[in-house]
Length: 212
Image 1 (spheres, helix red, strand yellow):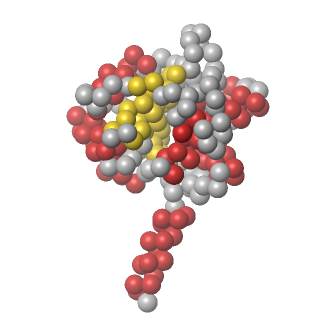
Image 2 (cartoon, rainbow, N blue to C red):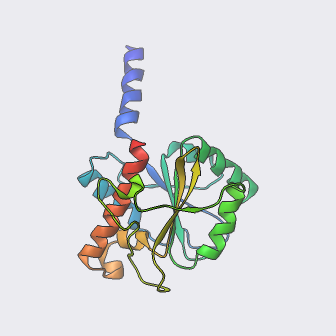
Image 3 (cartoon, rainbow, N blue to C red):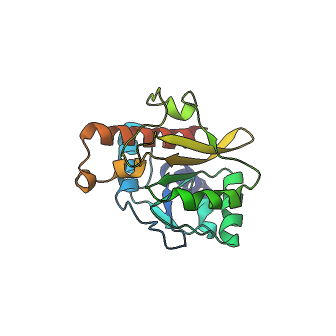
């Protein structure tokens, strides 16, 4: 009976307990910048692409062993990011072991995050992800690649990645503000078509992680 219970528990955790988390980093940047975004993305994915993600996202520090509990972690903000040696080591092990990090520049993060990414992968460059990559293909087609959600510096939206053995392990979205598009409607008063575009792109990211 005990073995049957443990088997059931294992199956339940595998099938019903997917969970994603927000990364709480150091350096003074506002890691908490978009408080409603991940919950809204989870709700959208559970309703539209048949995921079973816990409705409340977790929060995890990059050096915490709990990082390995999440198949997907999200980082955002407008300012400074500082990763300690322990953060770097744990993040690298997490990503090399099958984890996935999405960094979404909320405008102002770029100059700080790029050197920190280089700490994690000193021998790998960020590569712009082409529009024909699977992450832009399903379940929603983005034929031109990463969509533009908010205008800031007038630059085009770009998606960059770190690939390890041809596997995308880190996605960096720049000049896009996906997370702003995931927020509650009244936060930025975005038109419904803009929010829908952001949520669909977020669903593509989640779908890619859970199915590759």
